[in-house]
Length: 301
Image 1 (cartoon, rainbow, N blue to C red):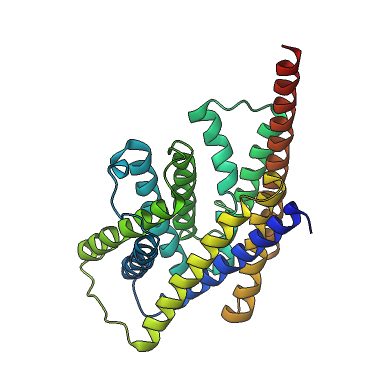
Image 2 (cartoon, rainbow, N blue to C red):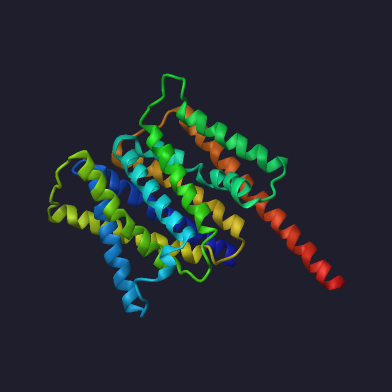
């Protein structure tokens, strides 16, 4: 088994874990408002990551948390999570997951706008086609349009902002600390929103606490696996397996929630995934060509 195949397998397993996490969150939305789900998950994740950091001899606080890139990343993470959890509560799981598939395309567009990345016409075309796929999923002017899907769109924008902000975070900042901070930020955000909404806090029973614990555990497992995946083999090929999350979401949505996405939703998903994979592979090809040219230039000198 090559490193690329191993990385692709790990990425697929991570996406399966995240699909299960989404399903658990949707199940919790029958008992709790989204704001409470957000701060409870944030509290559970904070405690879990804090315990791991302390067990490995790492401090919980660092002044680097106050730097602009990390504060921006944390803010976008909180916004994206809040909107996506809200979407899972009111939108079919398959539809919310379909919208989120466009996040890598939005990151590619943001790389051009904010980081000066060079994109040629093929990738511009792929990005445009991908967003056309999102419109097919949403159908904003058709009978199939659901206004609540805009919550998933806002979640996608927040998560794309998080990924773009991460590019500006120094490599010395560990992913574990970023995750600890991200979960910690969800607690005040969720509590504040629930307070503003004037909604009472509902005490979870033992069964619900177990589901919350399982949700946090599955999310952390997915995180650990995805970190391992990103360090193996050809990054473009491995990253393209992120789209397997949609396959798992469709399975979970059908088996556990009785959902059946319509024809145009599936068409839109296919368009978005195809455009995303093409963008990743083109980016990898350009990167390899640039690296090869640089090596030749160094050898010539």
